[in-house]
Length: 163
Image (cartoon, rainbow, N blue to C red; front, side):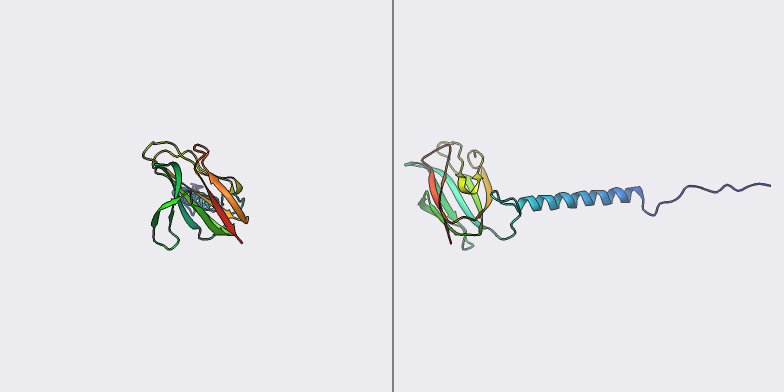
């Protein structure tokens, strides 16, 4: 009498390559979600703030009077360069999400530039010529606050947060 051997290997309903593909997609989704979550956290908050920020463009420049900040505005949807708004006073309302875009346009001296607003924990890195950095913060306190350069103390302006 001859016994038949049974094939004891079981076939999995999902192949190994399918499992690897699912793991890659899951890792990418989790990583992308973590990036989006963290990018929604303003520098002066610990939780995300979802909303459309008010964009303010500040140029670090060198004029015949020395180092200064200049402002570009896109509040109306069109970019307009003021050209005469040296060390501008920025006005915003309390509760506004502000995205501050700082650009070093000091081509005359090629000096590093930075921008700081201590009240809102805004501190850019030292920017070389034509480098830029964007920082988002929540204007959560009423009042008038100074923004300044730690590299060039004469560069300063104010941000006014209205009720």
